[in-house]
Amino acid sequence: MSSNFAEVSINKVKDYWNARPCNIRHSTAEVGTREYFDQVEARKYFVEPHIPLFAEFEKWRGKKVLEIGCGIGTDTINFARAGAEVTAVDLSVKSLELAKKRAEIFGFSDSINFFEANAERLSEYVAPQKFDLVYSFGVIHHSPNPEKIIQQIKENFVGKDSKLKLMVYYRHSWKVLWILLGYGKGKFWQLDKMIATHSEAQTGCPITYSYTKETVKDLLGDGFEAEDILVDHIFPYRIPEYVEHKYLKEWYFRYLPESVFRKLERMFGWHLCLTAKVK
Ligand SMILES: C[S@@+](CC[C@H](N)C(=O)[O-])C[C@H]1O[C@@H](n2cnc3c(N)ncnc32)[C@H](O)[C@@H]1O
Image 1 (cartoon, rainbow, N blue to C red):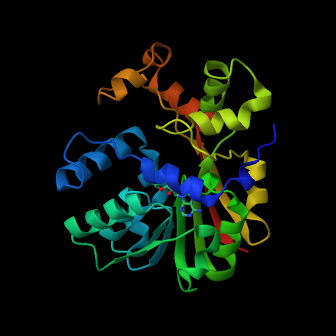
Image 2 (image 1 turned 180 degrees about the horizontal axis):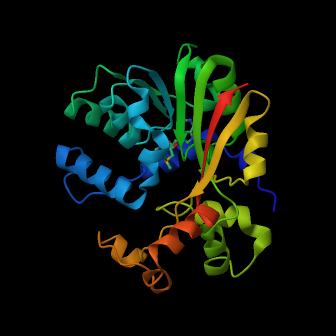
């Protein structure tokens, strides 16, 4: 099941995210307006309510936050709203354009510094400095060498009291099973490629690594120690209605008690959310 993701060029990754920035179609309003950004946020946190719980925006008031892979800036703006001083980087200039527009519209341009950067070589773009929190949600598994990003964080952007909050995709998840059975007809030897092809809203993502609770610790290397690892998020909605901004659950989730669904999410969710401290 080996992949050749490490050999994929960073430009291919950049082109993919420039062609369709993450969550760009989360709103039907005119792109780049206040209404648009409000709708994007409402939809994102409605479908993924674990994100604000994981990010703990309020906790970082007055602190320095580095966000790696900010996309169009939904979490970024919420760190700023909570009173953090934010540095946000992304590979995709198209995503950054919207994230910057968002900061302007909501009056946070002064508290967010944006950089177009490949996080695998972050110190070439952002001056080394200590951040209280390094946050990266759904990003490093799309980069050719995620371990280089961890190395960059460890060597240049944390001090002994800093925290790292990372979301990477969970391999033992409902979503991976769904991809394997639905698209792959069970061809498990092509699993990595299939996961990448179908992991995002736009098919054909060039790189999508996925991790277990063990392999994510290996990814951390000897610089960080995991404090908390939790699995969350099963997407329960039917896609044809969802793209029309309607929320109709798949029949097999429709009649499941909420408490049972939550238990399933905590066992087989797609998001492996890890909080770590510096060793
Ligand atoms: C799935 S999106 C997540 C965006 C945002 N964190 C969110 O939750 O909405 C992945 C983002 O990672 C960025 N990305 C991928 N590899 C990167 C790298 N090596 N350096 C910086 N950003 C990267 C992409 O450009 C894209 O915006």
